[in-house]
Amino acid sequence: MESAIAGIVRHLGASLKNRGLYPPTHPLVRTPVEKCHVELSPFFADRPELALTVSDGTLVLEGVPIFQLTSSLELFMARLGAIGLPAVIFERGVSVEDIERFVRFLHETKEQGLPIEEITARLARWGITHIRVTATEEEEKDDFTIAREIYGNALNFVVRALKDVRNGKTPDGEESDRVVREMSGMVSRNRDAMLALTLIKNFDEYTYNHSVNVSVLSLAVAETLRLPEIERIAIGVAGLLHDVGKTQLALDLIRKPGTLTVEEFEEIKKHPEEGFAILGKMTHIQESTRSVVREHHMRFDRTGYPRPEPEYRMNPHSYVIAVADCYDALTTMRSYQKARTPQQALEIMRKLAGKSLDPDLVELLERSLGVYPVGTMVRLSTMEVGVVTGTAEGGKGEPKVAILFDRAGNPLAAPQGVDLKESDLSSGRPRRMILGTVNPLMHPPVSMSGVLQTVSA
Ligand SMILES: [Fe+2]
Ligand SMILES: [Fe+2]
Image 1: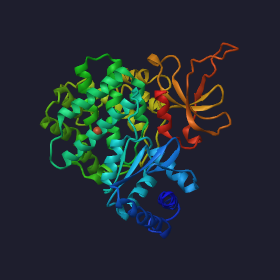
Image 2: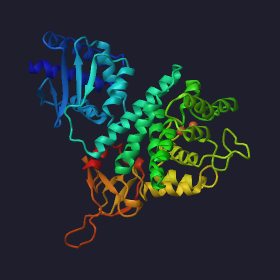
Image 3: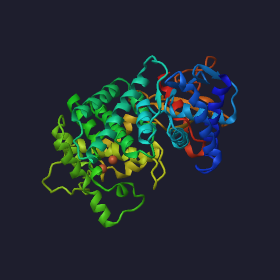
Image 4: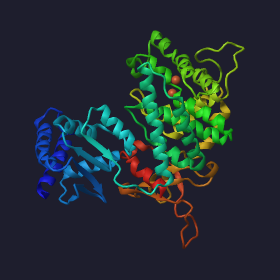
């Protein structure tokens, strides 16, 4: 049985590895999948499913650890770990197509540390029916785990809400209210844990993550402003649904990279009013949330769209969403732009202050995010390089950092969370200080799931 089990996993690994080298239809990609399927079948004679887990760095299939790791198995395990898959369950009836798509999913999914709910939703979207994922064991829930669940709930809501609208249904306003309340509570309790999640920049599913990120960022600003709970919720829901009106536009138009024609831009300009109309049909939506969705592109200097009449009074919360929207858009890679670092984004935004953005809020966002916003890559006095995972109290003092590269520039096996307050025993001076920011493009890509794990440590 051991050798058959090792064989199944080896085939999966081989297909995944070859997937990176050959086209999808190449026999070296397809044949291992077929072999895996053939070798899986006998196991389903006496059980309905087979569990593949990664436990303490070891691949385990149905309780049998696989110690002889080949390079393709290591790659396979690394992909599972990076995406955030603790356990994969193959169900009786699994088809060659399921396995083939699953390998493709592992190959093409570039984001890291995805919540289980999100992975499940994606497997469904990919048409994978007999392979599912679960958490291995109930982890002891720290703030970061809870924050990740809360973020996942919000993300699921957005996916469903946009789908509902496309299908002519009205999204569930009670649920948007609930997920925003959860996020608002977490922002108050542990802002770092919630803000760190906005680091997960999802290229394919831009709109969904962007909606949640805008909500989280505007909740952070609302909390710095010490707004009452009811207003925070209004702002958070507006952030979550600010672009819901885009569901009424053609997909090609939303996804079109680069400049739009005049006619296309006229189409895009309709989305705030469309959003306003959709929110009007939903229950549990505050009046100010609706106004904010209508006004999120009006701009601080009122030169945006829809163009306000001179006597029109804008809701001040609209400026909050505009600032959060701008920051998240600038720090995300799109087909037509590279991602800016948080510092670069804030620099651009300072130039927009007083024009499209409210200058006080740009300043407030900077303060909410700290001198070194979450996600900034920094060099330390030890010459190590790391990424900021938490903001210091009030933006002053030293942020939390996860070290990724040693002083020679070699990546660490796992990111190491360090406390910059810690002092050197002999000299009494801080062991590590931030020297400045570094360009992330100078370093190999970073495993964000590993980085985010250090947040809770
Ligand atoms: Fe918009
Ligand atoms: Fe947006």
